[in-house]
Amino acid sequence: MVEEDGFRRPLRVLVWGENKQDQEEEVRQVYPLTMHETIAAALRRLLGERARVETATLQEPEHGLPPARVAEIDVLLWWGHVAHNMIADEVVDRLQHRVQQGMGLIVLHSGHLSKIFRRLMGTNCHLRWREGGDREILWPVMPDHPILRGISRPIVLSRHEMYGEPFNVPAPESLLFISNFSGGEVIRSGMCWTRGQGRIFYFSPGHETHPVYHHPAIQRVLANAVQWCAPRCPPVTLEESPQCPEGWFEQDAD
Image (cartoon, rainbow, N blue to C red; front, side, top):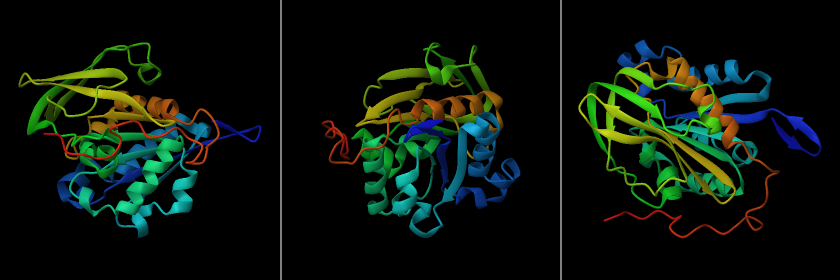
């Protein structure tokens, strides 16, 4: 819930999905409702009346993110993979401004290469990866953080894509998860930043051919993250909000 003009209203949450991978048969077997609808259904169940959860996809006009809709979003969840460069720059500008004004952003899995995440991080956000059947263990390392509420033990994914360090992002303000894989690699798999008045959470699990978003603990982390990322004050105009910190704009690292 957020307070607006003295009244409390449900959070307006939008789950954005690229939807291109969801159209593949292997992915449909894991996510018959699509990944974005699976995530949205979990959030509706866990958050109940505290949130109004909708979905949008790449294929919609303006990628489902026209100005009027973006202006109303409290928290945006973003999953992208093979179509990052198809996102119009004016939509990225729109999202960047809303984050600075206070919109929360949750970037999932391969969304680390999305235009909006790279813009906000100011780096190329590259990491090491290996597609296969590695076991991943996500170790919660900041147990008192609100996003880890109800997560008292490591989350084990029996088969997942390996993501590994070095992960070229700025040092996080909070490091919530570190993952290790059966191949020996590690990655900072849950991290938080702020940009302007907006809170950002990156969460690495979510390869499309593994049932990650059906996992109850993963769903709980996402529901907690929605509540943590939600605006803490009424939205402000871009002119009233703090200036972008140095390094906010996209630049490729050496």
